[in-house]
Image (cartoon, rainbow, N blue to C red; front, side):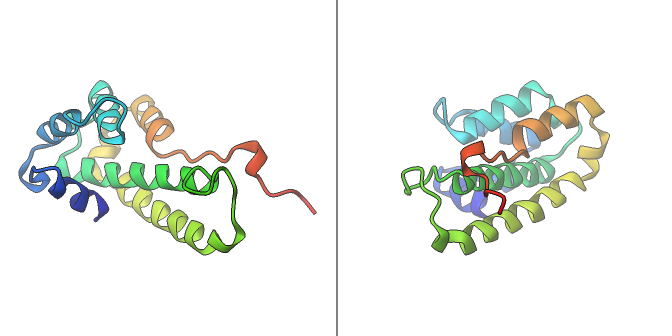
Length: 140
């Protein structure tokens, strides 16, 4: 998993941490980073109360995939705001990976124990991919 590679580089072993410890470790990342933001929101929503580390890991992976989709679908990577047709295969691959990871996260037992309001807010923040209006395909 991309997250595991990322966090092995950061110097802590996520697999041995509890859900709360996992969020505390992510909170150590600099302010403004994806990791820190994920930790803050997940902590505020008290996700570790019903989700274990593996479930938070799945949500983190899905949220990271959603962010990568947003970047790709809105031309915010190295393309200077342009949506290049030759990168469509890559965008499709990112979208498919996001949908797979989203499904894994939403099927976790801990996720299902969350209140409807908390699930909706977590989905809104972590699992939504918006395409800016100017980047939508024009109808023929």
